[in-house]
Length: 116
Image (cartoon, rainbow, N blue to C red; front, side):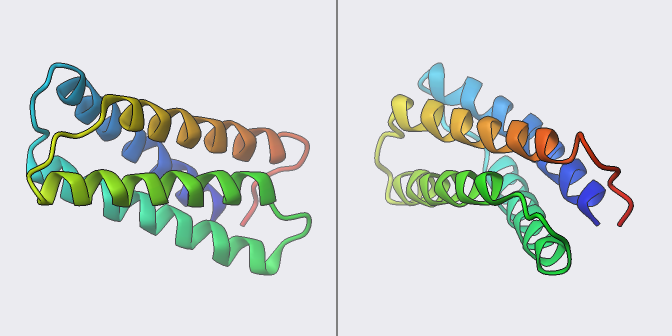
């Protein structure tokens, strides 16, 4: 299960990098990218929480960072839907926090196999 979460986070990160490239060029990301990125990341977070309910130790740092990144993502989507300019700093911070969460997730599992 954790492998699926990692795969979904990876795919979501690729889409997120594409969207960030648009934001940094003062362009709006396409709705298709937005509607792919968010649900993929949400599904990965749900899988991570389900995995954590059955395994110990849990990747707590990763979970916290992903929830913070998700909050930033919701704020970015709200800015976009309200027609406001998407703050570049928030897009960068959102991505960096998510990458930190991903690194913590990978490191937390490096000493054991992801068998579930």
